[in-house]
Image 1 (tube, rainbow, N blue to C red):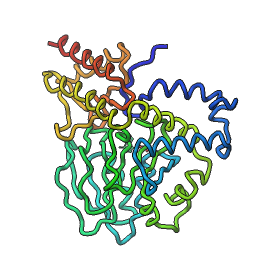
Image 2: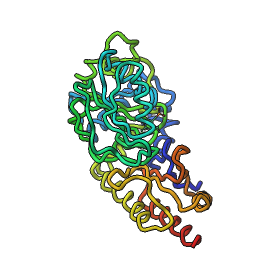
Image 3: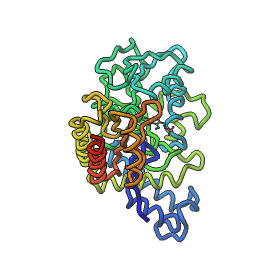
Image 4: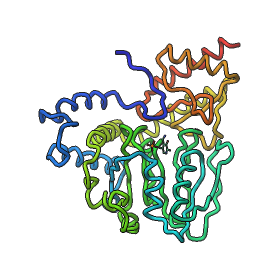
Length: 356
Ligand code: PMP
């Protein structure tokens, strides 16, 4: 079987080693004679999976005892409402940094529960991450999207905010070291850098979780995930298993600093090519460029379509830009190999030359 080079924005490429281990674990988890999908979530075999997954996450992210590691059986969208429902009172204000489609959806949900103050906005074209913000007087929290998957922009560092940060890190979690200090809660859908869709990882300060409403249904409170260790009901056992394998893989690669170096190199190869090209133009402003999702346009629609067709023939997949932006998008998550970027650049160059 020839596997394609997968540049999809998510669900996305996962490390091949992890997929092979998961393939074996479907039939037999850790020599138990029972597959991961078939094990009771309360049995010792799965408890070991949960423990080693949490331990690997704590080690890789550098979390101390003040932080909880939670697995929520839903994607990142779930947290767009779960966060304000838990933490934003009717008469309170939360500040939101508006950098694109995902922050827009998060704000829409927050408005159901309290007041949203837009502290900064990259509107209308969202090609950059706003350099200045105007905070409200006493925000309950400040929400930002560390990486905008669709527009291809990324915060170089978390915003300097007057309140605890809540971060949607779905598309760049564990792609670089995390600055935990200003954060209260970080959530991420797993289907880019972590594992399968339909499950999210939440890193949360326990004191922040404790400050949330306690009169909501159990699964709407982060508190329940902390006290029940994400096992109030049957969790997504397979998702947790895969996340554990991916994070162990990250550790074996040298951890987040090593991955950040590799990811910087990967993105630089592509951006350097695009910057010198006369046919291809990157969409995001230089200082705001994402290392995870590189968005760019061709000189003509025909050139873009030719490139997409050639890419499919060569086994390079998932390069069509999001429909709201157009053009092309190459997602360079942790599992996309450096050599894959070289092949992509070669083909972009070849298509450009052929069109001259
Ligand atoms: N936030 C960001 C930054 C995303 O990229 C995505 C998905 N692409 C989401 C939220 C939504 O994730 P889900 O579909 O898992 O709810």
